[in-house]
Length: 516
Image (cartoon, rainbow, N blue to C red; front, side, top):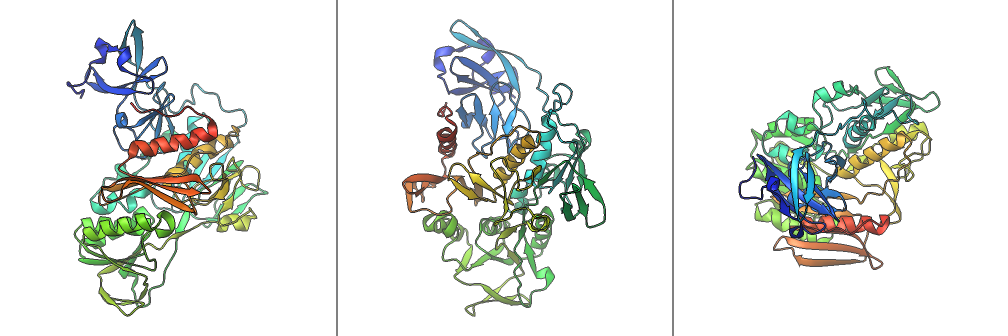
C-alpha cells in the first residue's frame, strides 16, 4: 500500500531535487516506488529486495544499479532484473518521463522474462548436457542462471541432501529461534524445478567421476552423462569424537535436517553446551539462548573469531554474548560426556542436556581428487572457475580461485560468494568467458547485532577501528602492506556497500558510488 505521506510521482517530481546517484521513495497509485537518478536518466523501481524484503531506499546506487543494504543483492535500475545473488527475482519497474523541470512516473511496465527461453536464443557454445554435483548455494544459482541465459538442454542437480536447495545461513540463525515455514527456507519452490525442466536428484551421492567417458556414477548405480560439469559439493562438518556421548547427546549444524533435530531437542531441554566459538557455533549459541536455554560455550581459542576478525571484534562478540547470559570456557576442550555431565580438559564439570558441535568444516574434494583434478586445500580453478580439466568447473566452498583483489589464490566459505560463483560458472559453461572478480562478502547476526564483512584478509599487519565497538557503530579495516584488504562494519550498512563498490571500482574502473 502506497504511503500517503510520500510524494505522488504521478503528479511529477522536481528534477533539481534529485541529484545524480540519489533516490527518493514515493508512490504510484497504491504502490510504493523508488525514483532514482543516474546522470540525466531517471528510473522508477520497487522498494523491497526480493531476497528478504529489505528496504532498497536505504541501499546504494552504483551507476545504474541499486544495491540492497541487507545482503548486498544488486538490481538493474533500467529493468528491475536481479543482476547477482543473493536475490534471484526482479523488482517491479515503471515507465518514467521527463517533462520540463519535472519527472513523472507513468504506467507499470510488464516484468521482463526472468527465464527468456522463448525470446533468447540458446547460446551458440552451449554444451549438449550439464550436470551439477551439489544442491547448495552454488549449485542452485548455477542452474537458475543457465535457464535464465536461455540454455534449454538437459540439466540435472545431484544432491546428497534430503531437501531441495534452501537458505543454509538460516540453519544456525532464524530457524533455531522460531518455527519457519518451508517456503521461507526454500530458495525455490518445487514448481520451479518442474517448470524449468531441472532434474533435481535428492538423497543421492556420487560415487565417481569419469572425465574421459564424461559421466557421473551414483552410489546406487545410476549414471548421468554430461558435456559440461559443475562441482559444487560444498563442505562437510569436521566430526569431533566425544568419549561417552551417545548419538542422541550431540548434534552438528550443517543441514536443514540438523536444524530440525536441534529445534525438536530444545523443546525438552534446559541447558546446552556449544563446542566451538566459530561463526556457526556462536550463531547457534545466540539462537538457543533466545529460546531460553542456559548456554555455555567451550572452545580452545583465547577469544572468539580472533584468527578471522582479530581480538578486538572477538572480545566485542564475547561481551555481547555474556551480556545475554552466555558463559564461555575458552582455552579448553571437551574431554568426555557421561549422562548430563560434560568434563572439560582442565577437569571442569558442566551440566548439559545435549551438545552442539560447531568446530569447523573441510572442503568436500574427494571426488575431485579421485578424478585427477588439481587439488590444493580446495579444487584449484582459474579466473573462469574452470578446473584443470576443460569443461569441468567448480564453485562455492570447494573452489580455490585467483582473487584479483588480494592477488592470492583463495578459498572462502561464504554463502553469497558461493551463489555468485555459481552464476559466473554457469555463464562460462555457456562460453561467456567471464572472470570471477566479485568482492567476497559475508555477514553474521547475533543477538540482533549484524556484522558485514567485505574483502578477504587471511592475514594483516595493521588493524584500524573507526567509530565505537561499544556503541555498535564502527568500521574495522584490515591492512596488509598499507593496503586495505578487508573491512568489517557494524551499524554502517551504507559504508559497507560503499567499500565493496570502491574495491570493485579499483579493479574494474567503475564509477564511484553515491548515496541518495
